[in-house]
Length: 123
Image (cartoon, rainbow, N blue to C red):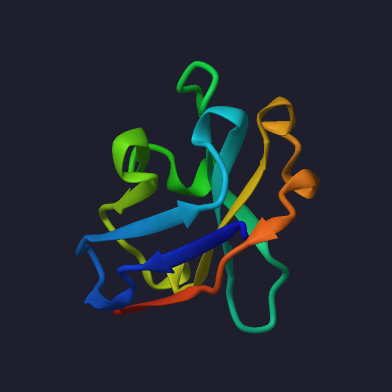
C-alpha cells in the first residue's frame, strides 16, 4: 500500500524556522517525484516545492524561493522541507504528495497524498 505521512508542523513566530518531513512507503522514490503543497483557509491548494528522483532537480514557487529548501533521503524514504524566514502568509496545512517521476513539474499529476500537517506563523 502506498502511503505518505507529513509531520513537523507547529506554531512559530514570524522569522522562525520549521522542518517538515514526509515519510513514504509502498513505492520506490527512484520512480517518483515528491512535492510539498499547502492550503490556507479560504484559498486553493498550491504547489510549494517539488523534487525529482531522477536527477535531484527541484522547483519552488516564487514566494518561497531562497527561504524554503527541499531535500530527500532515499535511505530513509523521506523528503524534507526546511522552511526559514517564515511569514504569516505561510500559514497553511502542508501536504506531501507523489507522482510518477516523468510528471515532475506537472502539479496536477500528483495524485498520491498524505495527510497534512498544520503550520501556523504568528506575527
